[in-house]
Amino acid sequence: MKKIIISILLSAFCLIELIAQPIHGRSPLPVIHENVNVRIDSLLRTLTDSGKTAGLSALIFENGKEAYFNAYGFADREANISMDRNTIVRIFSMTKPVTGVALMQLFEQGKFKLDEPVSKYAPEFANMKVYKGVDANGNMILESAKRPITIRDITRHTAGFAAMDIPALAELVKKADAFNPNNTLAQMAAKLASIPLQFHPGDEWLYGPSVDVQAYLVERISGKPFDKYLQENIFNPLGMSNTHYMVPENDRKRFAAIYFLGKDAKLSRVPDEQANTFNTSDRTLKPGGWGLTSTLDDYTKFAQMLVNGGRLGKAKILKPETVRLMATNQLPDTITKRSWLPGKGNVGFGIDFAVRVGPPKTKEENHGVTGEFYWDGAASTLFWVDPVNKVTAVLFTQLFPYDPIQLHKKFRDAVYGNYIP
Image (cartoon, rainbow, N blue to C red; front, side, top):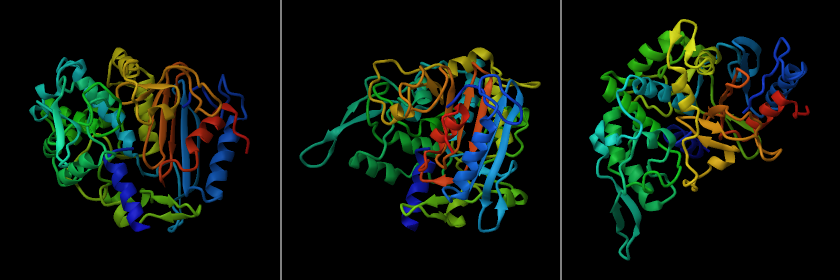
């Protein structure tokens, strides 16, 4: 079991990781009828009482006002610490949109263009080779990339970085150890660049380390360490005082445990020495694709900034047109190989978000309004932004493997009224 848990966590760290119409909390919202908060409460209570997950919390805003909040179950079941508004969780791939905002701040400043080669700012990625198979002797066959990796490619996961599904490339990925927590972002980038691409840039969509390369670009272009850049340009202006790579020692009582739902439907705690090792010491690596911890209110501030077109209060993080660009599908129809992205529903991919391009095609698909953008995290967390109805939602838990209980579907159904308790 320990080996399985470790494997899942490592995969989540390195590679991973709907809604929309307004909903109701303590006061009625205009689109969803006033029983919605009862439905959401019932769902969260049922899932925690039944032991499907240890703790759940959700925070929803509409038109800048809190529309729903509640929390059920435990942040730390063994210590009898309840899940609450101030619980700190690992957001895993919900780090990615934060990195995207940081990069696009520099875009606004004219520091780069989206269709420029990444190698203009990170020479490690010049002259990339592409894997074409192995010969009779087992040697890899490589060819030169048809075109350079562009910055647009790394914002939409079309760069071609190798995954773990081709044995020859998987072996190189393991040997490179790009995401060793003792690596700098520069060392990480050099190791990634040493691995042949899995496909030519722009040919396919494949989730991977692209956003970590974005973090490296932020560092190179801004001249500041990535974590310092985030602190000065996003977290401090938005008042996100509980968002960190390393959880401060005096806040660790609020740090949620991670739980694993086995095939026997029993929930077991992931040992703290595995779950907490990255976030309880000051690791050299500050990845762009994962690693941050946050609270409901902190991440809601980030989401509210996005739904407001880049502003929150006096803080001006992005221009409205930049947010619209990020929330616009960047995948042309010519990119037909999209890995598991179609499983997310009727979506494309913008700049570090999935973007809904049409209404759900079936009742099994997650609910969502055309134009919404969202992402989730390996420990089954979720957020979305609905610019049509000015709604944001953040759902927190700490459950592995990723969403084994169809939590995201059920939560959206509860919001829309299709959930039957």
